[in-house]
Length: 398
Ligand code: NAI
Ligand code: NA
Image 1 (tube, helix red, strand yellow):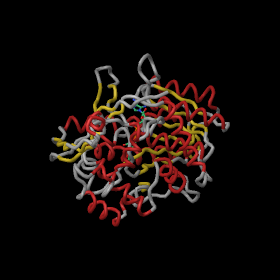
Image 2: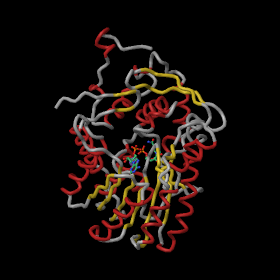
Image 3: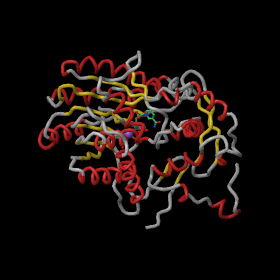
């Protein structure tokens, strides 16, 4: 079947189901070439399992550690003219491959913020999953969270705090770099971002599993954070998202104490910047990720999402001698990105990237970025067609 990608700005509106399946199979294959986790969990719940870090972690724990997994995600099946979302097909492909290996892979599709979802998952663990949960991965990235009283939604924002911010995004539809400026967030926008992307819902899940006696002795839970560098600070860690991440970090400390009765632990895994549905929205991020990938590839230190999350699981969270953290109790899988040499090189390169030269791969890894982005929806870079390109036989410049 010949499916053309439909891209609006930085959003892929459709996907290629067969491409998604192949991509999952290839990620599983990659993982199987890596050393396995020797002391990993066996009964895992992944909240936000259908794409990005959650999916990569699920692949790591299942295929690199032989864990049974439950995955929760918010995805759409195909209906009528609509292709369904990539995450829907990722779930199907993951389950097919896991079951072939004799592993349980159960999917729940719906709103992870809601109580009925908690109840369904609890009922399933009790009646069919056999055994209590020894690892909970919390990896939601959502734009909104329904208010529990039914009065609409909290909305998350990607904005600076205190001062305005100006940066570029790569408009993937038009193949252009576009300047974006952002006013600072209002106090309400900060609060709502914390409600959506902070730790409240993570804590609700852990308390719910605990009160239903479903947590195993030695249980570990992890949620993912991004800290980044001076380049990304004003728009990320110093912005609304950083406020939500600080709340997530505080929650991990609270949960860590709470779980001590199970000899359990709660952690924050600080990840490197990865191309995802969400990260291409953040002003300044795309060019930063292109420069980062170029530098890491040159150093032979570049990791795919699945390799990165497997390293976080194997060498940090499930290290045989205990969890590896920094002095602030954070897991720092972002060590390669934040290496001062790497940062200095990113600074040097990013300055040279312009709206005219960015497609040339001269200073940054544009091809890699596009391939990653298209791959999220089961496409390849070659699937993109630009009307201007056909008309003039030249790439469109802005
Ligand atoms: P993603 O968009 O690829 O994955 C989000 C997942 O959450 C999907 O499985 C989606 O279906 C699910 N989801 C969203 N709303 C839901 C809802 N209401 N109910 C149930 N499931 C829902 O995002 P990504 O990038 O993997 O982000 C996951 C976490 O990792 C976030 O906390 C993000 O801040 C963090 N992170 C991401 C980095 C990156 O560079 N992409 C870097 C460091 C941390
Ligand atoms: Na995820």
